[in-house]
Length: 82
Image 1 (tube, rainbow, N blue to C red):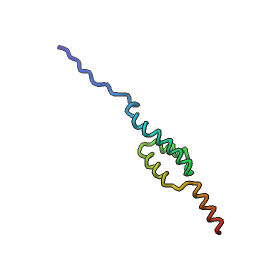
Image 2: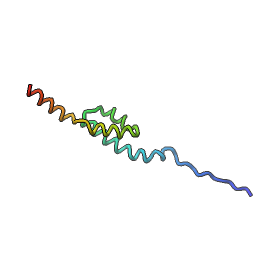
Image 3: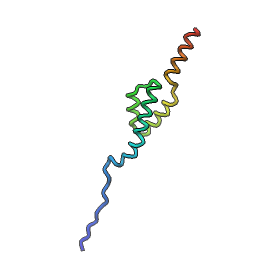
Image 4: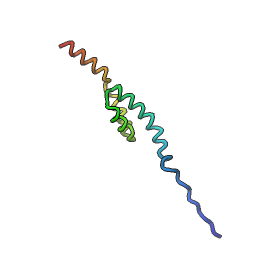
């Protein structure tokens, strides 16, 4: 009796990355909008946003930065006091 054992086929590599892409792409859009508002280089933000785990830490760092608009207003207040 000749029985052949068929090994289960593995999904393509891109399908194994699908959950990571589903999480990364919306976070990348969010990072780019926040980076523009905070005055950070958008190209650098997109590059760092593509790296898993780094993108989450970078998003937290961006969220903790003061807005560029607020910094300009504070500088204007300091200039008028002097």
